[in-house]
Figure (spheres, rainbow, N blue to C red):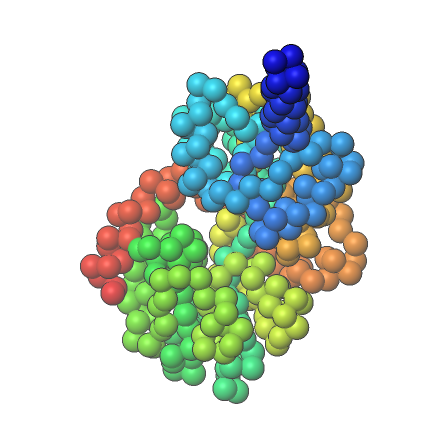
Length: 336
């Protein structure tokens, strides 16, 4: 009996030890830090190496992250969160993200951060044209949004359906602003798409990176980082065009989770991510750092000149999200 009792106690202690070890295997929790996206794999490794803080990979998307934070509001699990800008804004408004201004916060441009620090950009993409030069059939690379309506680009231009895909909607916002519209007036954008419709555009509903690489879609409204990925990682004859009329930037943001279990560790992580060293890591995935950090010449040379990027500006992202549904309905009624 004593032997059996001792064995049971030992098993219980072993089980308890295992449970405690598993629960404490990570020092901090980040929601939506997927290793395949934005080179989070290198970032998490650097945080472990430089700070001694272990954070597991997490493959939630932005919507799942916000839903989880709201579900856990009374007993948070995560310490920091990463998401698309509109979800970061919602997290702040819903009280699941708390104010924190990491070192370097002041260097982030206005419009790319909440003034109180409830969310702030860590890197961003710029909407423009991802061009497969080998698939143009002898036509020149377009320089402007207006060029896309020319006969030589008939059947070559693609954009994701703006009524269902965010990148398509971001393209619509960019075009609308380029021709004098605002978030209160989409008339110029609707007119552009009506005129472009006469040039037989390709309008898929889902991500079309592979279709550009294959040449099926020679010109696609897309982010700069996808074009750079094609050019430098795939080694193809691709180019990113930031149209002459201007465009918009699309931020990816982070927050310190309100009442998270390890706020001090979360703050250290966010400080590192906004440091010069941390910011440079995002360029591995061809994302522009949120802060104007100096990059090695060989890295900077992979991006368009800063003078070109001056044509891409922030928008009121909260309002952009608010009017998205109405624009989508109008697009389906007046364009499609």
